[in-house]
Length: 191
Image 1: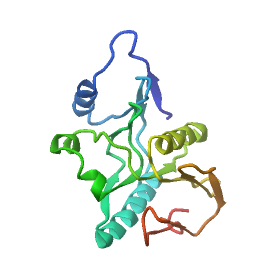
Image 2: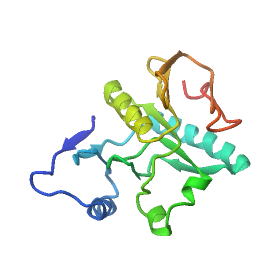
Image 3: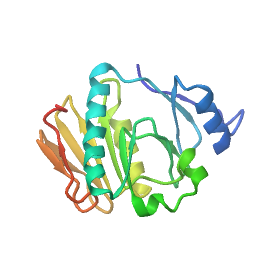
Image 4: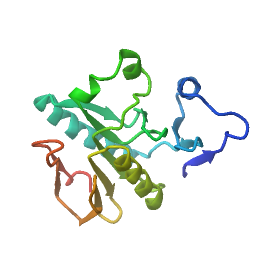
C-alpha cells in the first residue's frame, strides 16, 4: 500500500487547528500535510519495518537518556515545519535549548519546529524519490543531519545543511557527528 494524497484546497483549506483535530478524530490513520496543503494518508508499516523503526528510536533514546542534550520523538510525532508542511519522521531529535523555546501548548500539539536530526527508514511500499524529497524538505527547513536508510539496497543517504548528499554502501554504523556528539547508530540489527 502506498501513501494517498488528497487535495482538499479547492473545497476547504484546513487551518492548523483543523488539521490537528482531524488527526485526533482519526487516530487509526496517519496523516501528513504537504507545504502546498495536500493531505497525505500514510499506510501503516509492516512488522519488519515497525521493528526496525523501534530499534532506531531506541538507540537514539538510550543515547539521549545518557547525554541529556535534547528530546527524542518516535514516528507518531508530527512537526509543523517552517514551510508549512506537517511531517512525521520515523525518529527525530531536537536540541533541548530549541525545545524549551516552545510554549506548553505548542509542545502538546504539533510542535512548530523542524527537528535538528531525523531518520527515515524506507519501507517496501515507500517511493525512494518521495523519501528523498522529504529528506531535502527537512534539510531545507533546518534539520542539521538526516539519515535515509534503504534496507533493500543496503544504502544510507546522509543529508547535511549546505552539503551534497553522501551515499554510503552497507555501513555498519553511523556517527551523529557534531549534531549528536557521541551518538553512534548501529545498523547491524537494521539490515
